[in-house]
Structure formats: structure tokens, C-alpha cells
Image (cartoon, rainbow, N blue to C red; front, side, top):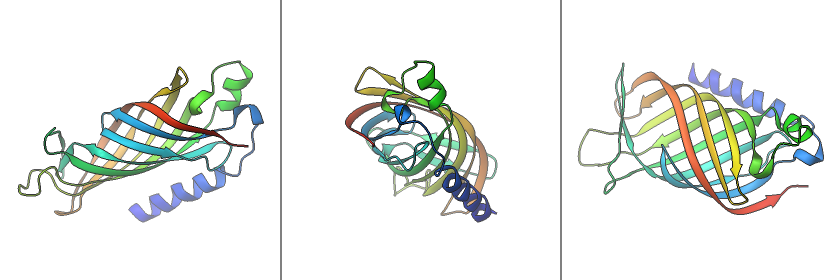
Length: 188
């Protein structure tokens, strides 16, 4: 079932990546440091087309304890869990923002996204958190704050699975992060 859902979204994003848009609203390739709900990390956000980017992220934050009907997030500052995530984003309103004179700097716009996230346990000696995979679909906004910072928030629905114990549950996917942009490359 998960493979069917994953294939459907990959095909959908591939189809949408061939859409055309105006040069004024082209997306940029960004390298950034993130601070937010998922922890502290680094993200590389390359442009795949005029309307699609993908966040490739890695960092440290909290771990997950997942059961058949619950999801607990445990943050231990001295013993963090590590995460790796992949998030394709389809921006659907950048042309409209550009035509209305609104800011499109640092890939500002509204988007639909799909997140695939792998998280290690906080503490390998205890069984409180374990290796986890979280998948969600969400709606989000990304906005520039000045020339070097951005905020990104999203909400949606997801499925979390404990890899070690084979438990899983549906969860509300809510995320917020503040990013400092190290490198910005305007695409032609």
C-alpha cells in the first residue's frame, strides 16, 4: 500500500515538473541551516523545474516512540536523534505572486509537499525511541525574511512507522522552521 502511494506521488511530481512558467518567478537553488520543530540541520533545496524543488535535509533533533495508536516525540539535547529527509515541493502560486508584485525571493510561495523522513533513536541503550520512518503529505508556505532568512510552515496528514517493532500510526503533520540561507543560486 505504501509503495502504491509513494509511486503515485513520485509520478505526480514528475508530471508537474514539466510545467512552464515565466522567468520572473523562477525558483533558486538554496543551501541553508534550519532551526525548527524537527531540530537543527542543513538543507539543500535544488530546483527541479519552474514549479518544483526538493528539500534534501539532515540534522539532529528528537526521536520517536511509535505505537499502533500513538506517536511520542522525545527531545534530549545531550543525546539527540539524527534525521534525514526528502521533501519534494510543488509551488502553485509563484506566477500569481510575481504578477501581483509580491515577493518571490528565496523561493517564497505556497506549495504542496510530500515528506519522507528517517529518524534514528535518541539513545541506543534504551527502547524508548527506535528507528522510524515518517511519511506525510502537506500544504505549506515558504516566505523570505530579508535577503538571508526564510520561514517555512506546513500542515497535513502522515503515517509514522517504527521500523524495529513494525508498529505504525496516522498522525497530524505540523512543521515550522526558520532557515538562514548560506548560498543562493538563481537558475536561468
